[in-house]
Image 1 (tube, one colour):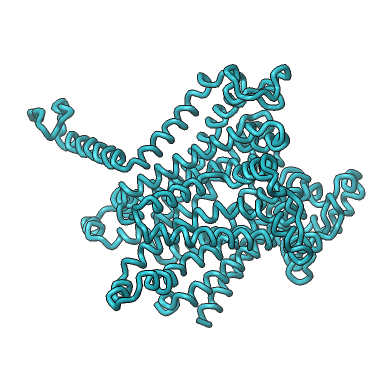
Image 2 (cartoon, each protein chain N blue to C red; image 1 turned 30 degrees about the horizontal axis):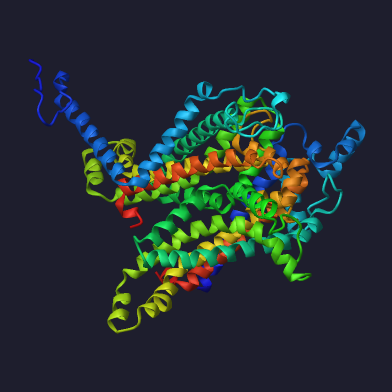
Length: 318
Length: 317
């Protein structure tokens, strides 16, 4: 059978006539248009754009850390300790002679990696749980939501303290220490995500296309995960973005208390703790790591709010 | 209402049991033997005394028996054991320090409400004006800034640079009110600013919803002065979620003041928890976390019931 070709039309601005499946071409065009609309909406909302730029800066700094940092963040250099900001050391040096700019930059990488992976763990655990719970309802839903409620009744910081204390007691290498932290932070996110998804799924479940799919004989998992879930993703994306900021704050608090990574690791919270000793003589030691944390979290919050305005205008504060 | 209260109280029990299981399991999740976590290091070095101690503490029995005995000791006798580092009775230590934490939490929530309610209301009433944007921006900043950094900045500015306010020491309000309040400003302020940011956004959106309702137009059309319409009628209804959230924040603060107490050397339960963590004093950690979590759960229940009482639509509908 002759393969149909699609001539470039105004509807296919990318000239997708190479695709032999017109359906595929239409799908990609739709995605492209969606992204263009989203970008335009984002641009309209100035604050959200600013948030997006801030998030981009943080990600770039984290990615390019080995190239941006000028010195080794861990190596001690007592000849240059406790200096103020200068052209040689942008943010000054700490009491071990380490360049604070480098420590902030490498700390950004650590924070971004941990927060990102923790949120992903939360998504991977929470979304399927919430979907199944909302889709099947009944006993499964009741039991799961009871567990989630019990979980949410526990004040978050206490759980993090317990987890971090246990992880610390094992005296693991930096890698496993970090993995443990990521899992703990991610697992703590799961109930909130599950509940969010469950609420959306419950709403979608009653719609006609679901009933149609049932009638046609589609399998349960197909309906739940390929048809219902994609329509419920907006609140999840928004929550995930804001959670990124929250996880960074939690990580900073844990490191501040000494429960994060073992000492020479560059970490924003840990640096703030070190700065406490020198508050009277060298205030800038405390200013820069905290500024970095605030910048990152503000970026995620602004971006999350902006996403909320774009994806779900009903949720937006007018 | 009574039925709902009983139902919620009964619901509390399995939640608390789950909580206690997690706290109990903490000791056994640590590396090494449980005995090393429960008694001072010098007492557990000799193998003979070790075996004797294990028998005495019941560590040779199966886990569920240990859990049952532990639970029984706590619930019936209020006995949390002795601290490893200070060798003092844990329950006495913690309950001695609880008032300081409650004082800090109360003041922080009061400060936050004092800032947030006016700010949120004005931002809602004067929507999309410079006041609204300023308030929203400040709220966003307040939410993004870590509270321990804010605390450090406040110390740097107000205590070290300007010398206006002290940065440590605690005085009970019953002993010396003036000194007590003076030393309270920075800790409660740092905590309160972040809470205020959250509450401002909530008050603003809540007021925005209320103002759109029909009874507000009715009141206006009756010729009532605008000020009275807003402050006497609308605000009262809009504040219900705010009050609820404030209560929940107070409950969370009771467990979450660890960092701020550490910075200001505030002698509360948070600082006790921090010192216990640093000193690997596991019985104390267990006890502190259990007490804080229980307080939080009970306060959340209280807040939920109050919300139900304030908003009849919830309990009847």
